[in-house]
Image (tube, rainbow, N blue to C red; front, top):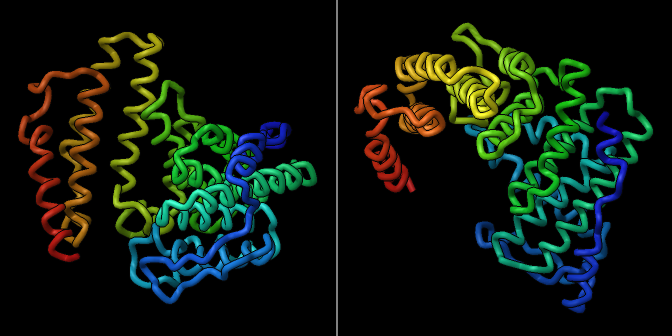
Length: 335
């Protein structure tokens, strides 16, 4: 159960040691953020005040960062995360930790990194208490906090707890079949993080294929399946190929299926990705990015199963750099 995952307190000895060596507590100094010159952090802040400043920074700078649509009104973070900040302590601390980490990375500020670590510990403790009090409920805020903490691990580069958060959130989703939101943002985000994490590790995804499929089928339009919120340039069909390739490769590596069967299935997946038609997507301004994802899926497959160049058309797989170069040229012209 998720509650058991968070039973033992996170060791904060590293935090205390680094604070002692720096001779400073958690007070913040004056910072002026490069992207918004008018956004200034007060010179000295006690934790309650600093947390509120970080929440405001999150709302202003981060809540739209992963959104690819038009305008801020429909972002998952403004619709789902920010409304929980006031009344859910674990979300409030996770948001503060994310904002502090974001500023620290911008400014290469060690004190703010320590502030982020401190708030992360607070978020974990608040989440642990919440799970103790309500272990049987599929509380959206619990899943949301776990996803936020997993994303924060990626942003900070400290991924020791990344798998812990993913597994705990996965256990809740598997038990209840949903994250409780209309468009299943957390469920889809969890599937994304879980599969992508498995591509670069030896573990199987925490979510079984049927759970991933259920998450991807949550939101449909007349033109087909869509992400609940417009936050990924990778279409759902291509992501599903990544998930299938990842699971197949794990089964092949562990000798749970014969090599010839694995290779046959790999070629079937490769041909499906090669002939995938995303004309309705490729016609828009993100067409080059989608094509890069498609080529990336093929390269991932070729590398994972050590397929020869002749397996697929050379122009389909090994001309990725031309697409990438074209994309970078177009984005540099825009900027």
